[in-house]
Length: 275
Image (cartoon, rainbow, N blue to C red; front, side):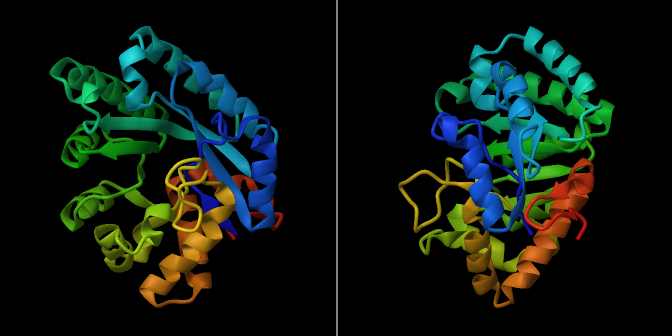
């Protein structure tokens, strides 16, 4: 089976079709979809959505793009939700969290400071509960790494990785995997394709970031988690290896970095995530 380690299945682009989208992915061999939260308003939504299918699980967190409208009290709410969710086997980590210095508003000094405050507190939550994190990293690779080294979670995934080889090694040394998806299907995405080709396969997990980052054959349309196998086939072609190797290794990588997910059934095969 394949695993989509990052998919916003609750996004408005899917609407009432969200569960159908999950079923379509299962029919294409996607045995597990990770649904990250983005703010206080959808913490319950992602949990409720994940409960309705056996190929879905979820993470809880506050996205850096949502930080401008967040209150510091939201962090206390998140901590309480995480504590309660530890009893739910479909809860697998903290995310989507991180730093975004690409958007001009978010790169202003006061907002950078607020993002850092939220990121560090969410790293503490992950550390305190022994959980991995799903990190959003735009124009902030070194800063995210700095905070991860200071407040160490139980590993994690650098979502949509697009840094340097040195930064990639920094994440690997910190116990992270690197997420790759639709971007690598574009022939003009030379750096991402080089990273996807030359980094150790043991460091890579598959993702879609659906409904965003659509692969070349879908762009500019809405991305969906059923695209993971075809994206994986492109990765296999770039690396010159069998697609089965990409599927098996990236699935094992995802299970290793998201250990709470490893016991969940893969809906496509009825097998555990470890197989």
